[in-house]
Amino acid sequence: MNITIEGVLAEIRSRELVPVPFDYTPLTGGTVSTLVSVGYADSKLPRFVVKMNKPAVIQAEAAFLKTYETVPLFPTLHYVDSGDRFMIYRYIPGVTDERRVKKKDWMCTLVEDVLNHYVQVPGDSAPEPSARLSCSISGFEWARNVIGEHLDEGDYQFVVELSRQAVEIKMGRTVYLLHGDFGLHNFLFDEGRMTGIIDPIPAQDELIYDLVYAFCSTPDDLDLGTIQPAAAMLKDWHPADTAGLHREMLLALYRRMACCIYYHPHDLGGYLQAWSYWRGLWAALEKAERFR
Image 1 (tube, one colour):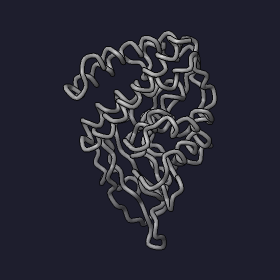
Image 2: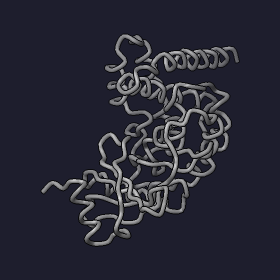
Image 3: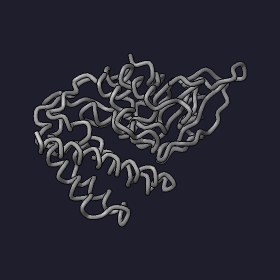
Image 4: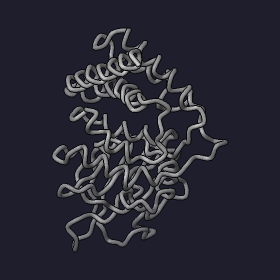
């Protein structure tokens, strides 16, 4: 039987899963989840968030939050339904998609306060390099279909070659449990300070995947000087060649352009400029390598 958010709230009240009586307000932003904030008359801010989704989604997100319960930027779980129909976590104040905070600053915050606290995935359950998000050919095929005439076939063949190189290089590399949707749209800021990170879509890959995902989540400041300080702080990041960061960036940027066209087409111009910039950096690296 399908359950509505009203039914969930009625159950929460009857079982007193949070203090009652309470007020609630629908929250926007989730693409597939239903969320409401729960508050009280004696407080200006909500105290809890109730989140509904498919059981597999709730189960994966709750497991992720339990794994990283010591990372302050992730929500603190209050209750998870035994049937994984919904969960309740502590409300975090702040706004998403905050563009006034410098990207270089919040990138370093992400590494120091989140990424360097990620845990490894057991070796027997870690995906092979060819199956990882960072070099999935199927993902690039989808991106090519969406990007269409904005880039040519040569750009697609270029990323396919980069992904092939990445598969070879990533053999034996450590895999971590990642947030998986690590973008500015899921980062909360309050008065210029990062206060929280919400809505994980748990994934398994190297740490650099979440870092470049965050970096590419907005079309501004997509230059080497902005990401280098954060990448230098990242634990367990030892690219097998000097072009490692550039390769990861180009692969992530190609996928991001497709998502941009699909969800935020007004940002495409900035991403196309960034693509030309990073392809230029790659060409310069190749030229320097030839003349060594």
